[in-house]
Length: 157
Image 1 (cartoon, rainbow, N blue to C red):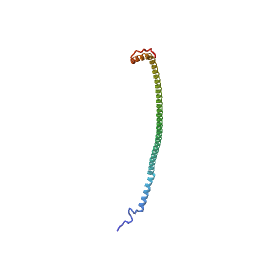
Image 2 (cartoon, rainbow, N blue to C red):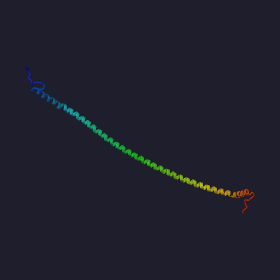
Image 3 (cartoon, rainbow, N blue to C red):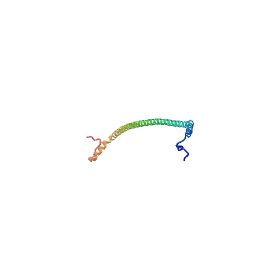
Image 4 (cartoon, helix red, strand yellow):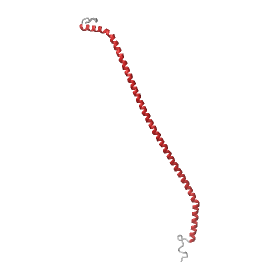
């Protein structure tokens, strides 16, 4: 026969074991709740504060970077517009300079042509005056050659 009761074992604890286990559980729970959990909560709160602070700082930096980028893009667009305006102005000035140079060239050409025409007319008049006295002599000489008889330059018909 077995002297130990059947209902004793790890799955069927006795009342004093239950009381000791309950007291030890309450003691461990008290130590955990009183000492360890506040420290753990404090550490978790510090980590959360650091993480949240870092996140907010990163968001602020991102917002600042977006503002700086927008400002940079606005300045770049302004510079592009200014460059386009300067190019347009330079093109207009170049066109005006070309037109002025053409007008000046045409004016000079007209002056040169007028001066040349006047010079030619003066030289023609001088040549006509100078050769006018030789025309009678040359005509008489030509008539003599053609007729074969001497013809005087002073003879008039």
